Image (cartoon, rainbow, N blue to C red; front, side, top):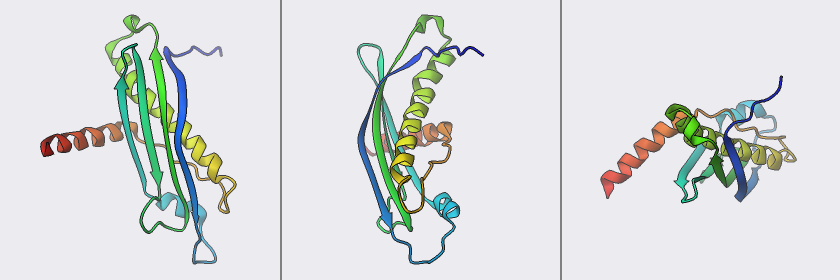
Length: 153
């Protein structure tokens, strides 16, 4: 099948921070898959709408990044992407909103997922692949956080 391209264009992606560390397990045998599934994952993000109709999306992902991390890996990946949407006048409001928010965030998370996998792949436990993320839930939590921060001001 011939691919139809999206009007959403990732113009640039920059990695701002990448950190990988290995926390030596005390146990001799560990079920790596179960351990990776037990890791806490925190994702923060922001969208900035620039003057030239570009969208800047900043994302920070932290995996098992605690004061007392679980054995195995601790990872941080932070990046920013610049997007442009073509033919905006021809798109429905619903599609345009999905592209501006959900698709842009998902693309940056996927780029950072790949970076985290590549950096951990040469580690003693093999590559850590960030599980699929519920983007809608991230936005709900972000809105709730912003409302709470607004109340404090």
